[in-house]
Length: 341
Ligand code: NCD
Ligand code: ZN
Image (tube, rainbow, N blue to C red):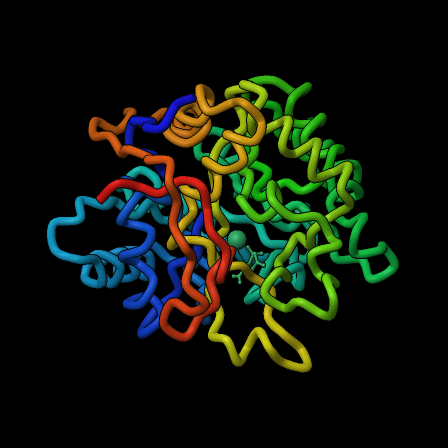
């Protein structure tokens, strides 16, 4: 039985670092383990301009502990009025790594999102030409579609036509939650990839109602049935190089979660790698953790692999009930692995 596991330093290909006091509180948790992260642009107001992304990147760097060596990779929030020139300029200047497509109304701070992908056709053409990845929140917002079906319906209504119309566009389906998404990504080949969160590997939708309403398990896309969780687990641990680590760590203050209308988002940054390690261990796939966490994403984005390493040690860690004003994922639980300091 392996008791120590040293892997190349991992990256987080989907994280919400927020801004202001929350940024100060959470940035160090991501930087402790990860060398780089794709930083989501759903601030209020959203990050739509090169100058705004540059300023945000500087605020992130300033919030990091000294000498952390962490690189934030910035994204542009797409709106119906997104400007292809601005986006391609930002990409060429090394500011925007990718663009994020939020269907308007799909999730936290998505009100300025895209109401119809046809509105951003010129942007998608420019991104395709520039080789700039499109990151999608893959849920339809049609209120007639059941919330548990919104990801599967998005694939048929939006994603499949989009991949057909933009045959060279690189796309990441973010935080996949269903068997349909896992199968779709697996069968499509090179230019379509997906990130997978720890909460969608650990929890089915039963966790939302376990003895009562559990706001800290609520995120979007919402947790699904057990058979979907198992399919997503197989995708993460099965060795396909187009699945990679993206925590979707999304902190909200405790009062905004424990509320009559609680915010969506799971704050998993403090013990994210430990959480993934538990899953890979349970699946007998610890030998595949490094590819999922530290190689697949970098290769897909065309970025160099990180040089440093991190070591996971069996023996575990007790996750605290609170981290600042936020309840972390696995609060009060013991995880079987810890990252060595
Ligand atoms: C995210 C947030 O809070 O910004 N929430 C979430 O449940 N994942 C937004 C998102 O990624 O959908
Ligand atoms: Zn997210």
